[in-house]
Amino acid sequence: MGVIGALQQVGQHPPGRSFRAPISRVLAELEQGKTFSESLKAARWLPDFDLALIDAGEQSGRLDSCFRALMDYYNERAVIARQMIVQLIYPVILVHFAVLVFLIVLPFAGSQFHASLPFLFLKAALVLLPFYAVTVALIYAMQNKRGERWRSLIESAIAWIPVLGGARRCLALARLAMALEALLSAGVNVIEAWEIAARVSSSAALGRVVERWKTRLMAGSTPAELIQATPLFPGPFASLYASGEVSGKLDETLNRLHVYYQEEGSHKLQMLAQWVPRAIYFIVALIIAYNIIQFYTGYFRQAVNVGF
Image 1: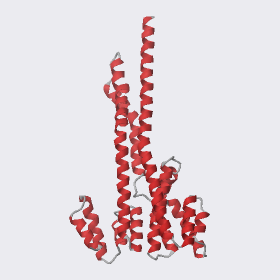
Image 2: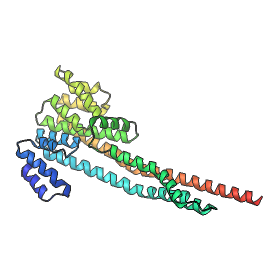
Image 3: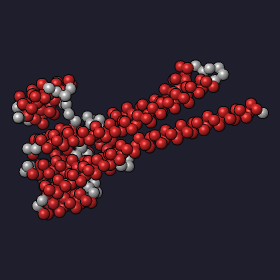
Image 4: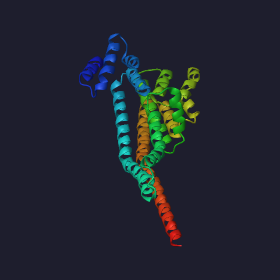
């Protein structure tokens, strides 16, 4: 089944109603003679990362492999997100319960004049507001449909975060190696293959580096030489790529690099999904314990003062 037939089948039985309109737009663009990737870009439906990978798959004749890679990427992302959400439910409930008790119930019960409940609820809402604001900001920042400047800023910020920065670098290198292997095996020239693979990596830093390589590649430098001179590429990546280039088995080497960095990045993300909720729970527990101690300290101090 060709691309048009496959899209028509998906359009007739879409996984969600929101898919019908963009699929119709893509089909309309295809009927005008555009390529699949050009039609997707014209429809303005998918993130830049998806478009770059599909473009690479179309040029290399490996659309099936690229779609499978996208499927694995989003499945893994959904699993990690689900895992973090499930583990964060209890700390989030604990935070709201603590705010309810310490800022509403106890002040209202201990007030001789019975402080106004609306005022206490407003005070609690102001305490919770920063947490909601940070959550919304993170969701907005992590969305894929953002400009290159914004993505570059987010990438620079994430690079300083332990574990998360390393995971993002590993996954970017994995996508770069996968796209390079597909493009070079399909006969795409080295310069163009590196430019497309840099876009597929979804790393603004890699994209800028590869863009600066173009003149030197055209002058006769090999990618292995440029990789070894670029601190952005880790030692194992540079060494393996150089050995693959010399031995003539670059496709096998790139496949190994893709598997290695994909597994390394996934492992780091899984570790992050496990430990972030635990860290938040520990911090919340410490705050609650501190407030309990402060409450009883104040209570006993009042009792002692009344006694004397």
